[in-house]
Structure formats: C-alpha cells, structure tokens
Amino acid sequence: MDIVLNWGPVASGKYKKAKSLYKAGEYVKSARVLTKELAKKPNKYGFYALAQCCILLGDHENAIKVLFTALEKDRSFHEAFFLLGHIHVILKRRVEAIGFYEQAVMTDPINEDYKQKLAGVISTQNFNSMNSNLKSVLIECMKSEQIEILFMGKAWLSVVEHDTSVEPFFELSKYDDYVLFKNDMERFSNCDGLIEPLFLAGLGRFIVTKITFENWLKFLRRYLLESIVEGKSLFTDENDIELMICALSRYCFLSDYIMSYGSEEEKMLEGLEKKINAAGANPVLAELACYGCYKPLYALSNAKEIAAGLEGGNHVSEIPKSQIEEYLAQQEIFEEIEVLGKIKDETSREVQAQYEVFPYPRWNVAALDLFDPRVEGYLKGTKAEILIAGCGTGREAVYMANAFPDAQITAVDLSKTSLAYAIFKTRKMGIKNINFYQADIMTLADLPDWQGRFDYITSSGVLHHMKDPKAGWKVLCGLLKDKGLMRIALYSRHARWAINEAREVIGNKKIGSDSRSIRTFRDNINTHLENETIEKFRFPLDYYNLSECRDLLFHVQEQQFDLLQVKEHLDGLGLEFLKFCLRKNIVEEYKKQNAMTDPECTNLEIWDKWEQENPDVFIGMYSFWCRKSD
Ligand SMILES: C[S@@+](CC[C@H](N)C(=O)[O-])C[C@H]1O[C@@H](n2cnc3c(N)ncnc32)[C@H](O)[C@@H]1O
Figure: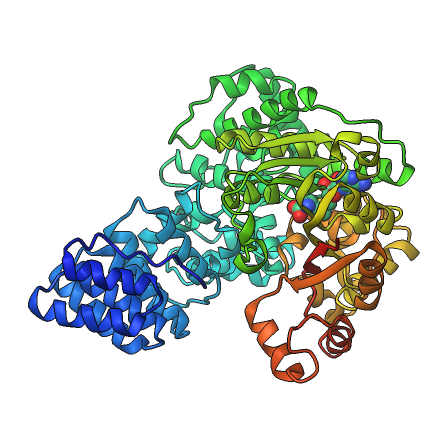
C-alpha cells in the first residue's frame, strides 16, 4: 500500500535543511539533522518527519517509537495515528493497524482518506468481536458517499453476526426451508434486535459474498412481506419497520433484485402494488419499501409523484426517493446521449441489447488502484487525450479523470443505459473532463479526426465481447498516437475454467439469460455443477448482483485467450508489451521463480508456462500495458 507521505508544516531553518535533504532522497542525512534539532527544539511535526525518514529507511520500529513521542506532545495529532496505521499495514499487523486508523478517524472524523484506509484494512479482516469505538467509526464509514466500501461486506457480517442483539436472528441462517425459518421467527416476542445501527447501516451499502447470508435475507424479506400484508406488528416501536424494510430494500436494489421469489410472494406483491397505486402520491412507506425489496420502485406507474412526496435528506424515506429520482434522471440523460455512427455489426447489437438491460457494473466510488507512476507517470499534469473504449457505467473513466485531472477524456460504449449511469455519476461528482458517446469500437475507424489522436487508450473487459477482438484492437491502435500507451484487459482461458464449465451447462441445458432464469439457475446450482467448480466463481461480487451475474456466466458473446495468443496479437499489431497490472505479491512470486529467465517480467512465453501452473493468477483478467512502436 502506498500513501503520499506528508512532510507537514515544519518551518524553521534547520528543519528546512532536513526537508531539502529528504526531498533529495538523502534520508539518512535528513534523519540526522532532524534528530539533532529535535533534541533542542522538540516539535510534533519534526517527529512526524523523522518517522517518515525511518519508514523510507526501512526502520519501522523506530518510526513507531518516534510517532509515539509525537503523540505525547499532542494526543489529537491524527496524522501520527494515520502513519502508525500505515506502518502496521506494512508490517502485516492488521489488528493494530485497524486500531490506529480508528484513532485517526476519531480525531479527524471529516477526513475521508482515513476512512478509506480503515475500510480497506477492514475488508481483509474477519472479526468475532468488536469494541464500541470501532463500531461507531464503521457506521461513519458506511454513511460516507465518498469512500469505497463495496468489499467490506464479509468483514461487516463477521461483526454483526456476533452482535448480541442480531445474533439470535442470524442463527436462523442454518435453515434452507422457509417454514422452519418462520416457525423460529415467530418464537421471538419482537424483532427489535434487528434494529441494530451497524447492521442497518451496512445493509445495502455493499454486497456480502456469502450464499447463506443471501438465503437468510431472502427468508427475512418474505417474513416481512407476509407480516406487512397481514398487518402484523413486529417491533415495539411501530416506526422501526420502516428502518428495517428500507435498509433491506437498499440491499435488494444494490443487488439488482437477484434473490428469487415464488408465486405466493408474487400474489402478495400484486396486492401491494394495487394498494400503492390506489394511495396515489402518498403510499404507506413500509408498504412501498417492501415492494421495493422485490421490484424496482421506478417501474410503479405513479413513481414520479411518489418520489416527490417523500422526505429526503437524513430521513429513511431518502432510500426509496433516491432510487426513483436517480433512475428518472438517468432516463432524461439517456435521451441526450450523443451518438457516433450506427451500430451495424450484429454481434455488437446483441452485446448492446444485453447491457441495455443489464448494465455493468454498479459502483459507488471509482476507487480503482491502477496507477503506475513508472508506466503512466509521464502523462500526469499534461493535457493528454485519453480514450476509454467500452466504458460501461463509467467507473474506469471517472477513475482516470481523477488520476489525470488535466487530461481530456473521451469515453464510448454501446449501451446507452450504461452511459446514462456513467454520465449521472460524473455530473454528481462534479467531474468535467469526460465526454461520453454511444459508439461501436468498430465504427471509430470511420472518424478521420480520431485517427492517431490519443495519447492513452484503455479498454478493460471489452474486446473479448466483440465478434473479432483483434479487428477491434486494430481499430484502437489506429486511434493511438505513435508511442502511445494502452491498457488492455482480456479474459484468460486458464483462469476461467470453472466459469467455462458453468457456461457449458447453461448452453447444453438451454437455460435462458433473462432475470428469472438466472435466479432459478442460481437456486439450483448444486444440481448443475460440482461444489469445487461452484466455489471457484462464487466468491467474487459478480455472483451476487443480477446484472453482474449475467455478465459473469450468461454473456451473449465471450471469447478467451491464453498468453501466447496475446503475444501473437501484440506482435501483429506492432505493440510492445510493457507490464502486467497485477498485485505486487503475485509479481514478487513470479520474480522469485523466474528471476533468471525473465528478470524484466515481460516474457509472455514464460508467463504462459507459469500461468498453467498457477491458473488462478489471472482470474481478474490479463490486464496489462503496452505501447505502440514507432
Ligand atoms: C464488462 S463491461 C466492462 C465495462 C468497463 N470497461 C468496466 O471495466 O467497468 C463491457 C462493456 O463493453 C462494452 N462493449 C462491448 N463491445 C463493444 C463495442 N464493440 N464497442 C463499444 N463498447 C463495447 C459493453 O457495452 C459493456 O458496457
């Protein structure tokens, strides 16, 4: 994990000297000057700077000591807590790191970076208890719209599962039969235990990649629906049903309604829909949100009026209100999207049709971790022209706009639904340097002004959905300047073996790819595939969201590659392979085993052999940078 190490406002003469030494990379000398000066004039920022030198010199234990000295001077010195968190992450002492990040968040609650780092470390952790400080800090993280907590689901569950008030309800996740679940639910005198702040704050802020949890939610949803329809009261405070059901509706919305339901629930929903329609602009909130646990509220005939009548802001009805209003805003944007040429290719049209109904992916914050200063650093601060080819719902485009704020970004995609989502998000975030267009990559070859125009083109998870990926890639090469940079991500055949088995079953059994068929396939997955295969593709978030599951297992057009084919394409297109965009630990492992034969880690033939021995390495695709040769 890299953080930008702040020097802090160290002002006077000797400290200035230490700073210039530090900036020149003379950390030993800088530390010496600082130590001398601190003995005479102790200053918390001086200690902080010294700790930074120690970190860069690899002396982490000393950095910790120095930071504790700084904290003796000022217990509210949040930068020191944050740096302590950072050091403990480096030292792989995650529990301690969480403690320090927690202190940083508590002493500076408006700092979103602190929350982001805390959320990042927490994502990898399994808890079985929790102190009350961490609990309130976590609730703060979940309220923030600016930090990416999508991956925190399992950690959050491990906490709330052990919370004494929610635990008895979670115990019912052992049932795979609704009748047994319901019998036990009815033994509780009330459901007040479910109104636990951390549980409600987390529900619907992220997806939990655990099938038993999803099944439990499915039963809970049915139980709440039945109770609402029967007018049964479940909570001591009548208003608590709104808190519970709105939070659950957020989960269902976020997962694009992936949980299945049967005909009895369908019947109850029909009744509920009639009641909601009859109530005009003012339906009962619990009934509305309950309907929203099954179906999108924006599809209700009077959705616009309902949203207008709901209170927003901090009120719980903000959840249904924003679901409707954001959709309506995207509908308006949809109509305005600029189109570049007709989509003529039949495969492109089929792919477009898929993503119009199942846009990919739903995202909160574009907190991708892709920037590589050695490969891309030269473009920072320049007015580079960047193209995102197949931008989907805009996550990568927004990430690039943040990483290259001076650049001019162009983003194209086949799907207007995806583009509308992307434009909506971009406007909400106040990002101004992206232009979105609907276009087929193939037709970009017909735009004379675009040829040789771009300094950098990225295309992630796109070319393998084209009829002829190499032809699409060639078009992109034509749009690139000489020596221009590309980041491409393609599916690996080796990594996707389990997904291929699932796709084969889906094909052979002629299982449809509409919402209902996807849900039914998931419900019966054990009858289709071996456990070992299922577990291979059931861990990523994609399996737990309907649109993403369609993309994962039911794609209308998918091709896959191995690294020898990638090499062949690169050679054929005049592209030089630069580097894989891979986690550091994977590259380290590769280096350890191939240091003699591939010291630069650029030999795709050796990578190919290595991948065959380690088939999971590229499960997240072959993502790599390459450069156009002269
Ligand atoms: C799996 S999504 C990836 C989206 C985005 N790159 C990301 O990583 O979040 C694939 C996207 O590629 C787009 N796409 C596929 N073929 C395309 C083509 N020929 N021209 C433009 N976009 C295309 C689809 O519409 C879809 O939005």
